[in-house]
Length: 145
Image (cartoon, rainbow, N blue to C red; front, side):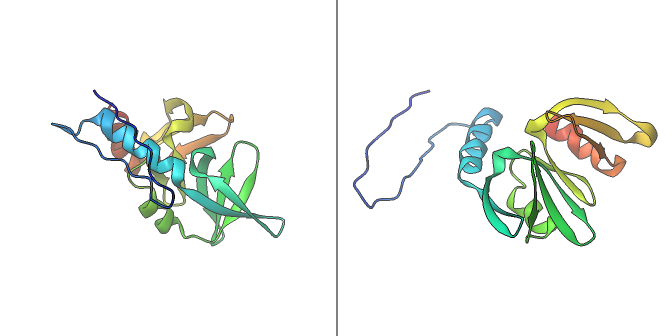
């Protein structure tokens, strides 16, 4: 693979062009990684708005008609709806785990079968999240299992 980096003139937009014979999984992961670096979320905590890098998010959860963004040590509220988050991050490492939860697959430390066809994930921040059995087939497909 050949990589070419060119300087652009002041005021021009950065651009990435990919020329390939076949768009394989490794190229798709690279593209998603670049896209994720640019995505920022607005999280609200103590009445203040914070810019959150999507890569720092462990999972999103809907509780009592509010959406929460869980990072390693902090929790923020989001004004987005869960379906909006799912649409925005559908081609990334984010995965719908239950009707009320979207997890970041890149933050999974351990995955194990649980009762009734469900799975339980242990995240890098030591939190545990259940994956509903209806979402297990999609999880296996995403992880290549």
